[in-house]
Image (cartoon, rainbow, N blue to C red; front, side):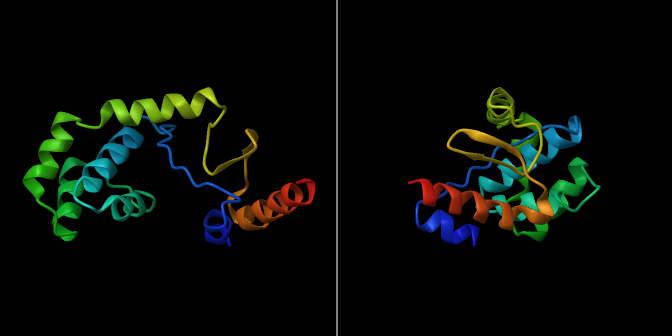
Length: 133
C-alpha cells in the first residue's frame, strides 16, 4: 500500500539516519552507507535492524557475505567516509521533530506512528488529504 501511495505521488518516502542509540547507531549508519557505495545499502540496513553485532569485524564479515570488496568497505569504515552525511541526516531529522522511527509527516505535520499500525494510519491520513483536496 505504501508503494502505491508513493507511485501515485500521494506520498514520498525519505530515509534519514536517526542516531538514538549512541555509537552503535553511528556505526550501523556508517556501515550501511559504506555498503551502499557498493550497491548493498538496503542489505546492510536490514541486517542492522536485526543484529546485536556492531563490531568492525562483524561488518566486514557481512560485507564478505554480500560479496563486496572488503578492503574498500573496511577503508570506508575506518575513514568514517560518510560521517558528515550521517550526522547531517540526524541533525536535519531532529530539526523537524523526528526523534524516532517510523515518523510520518503529512503536509509538514505529523509525528511518530505506531509501527504495527503504520499502513492503516498512512492510508487514513492519505484518504483525509484526498477528501480535502
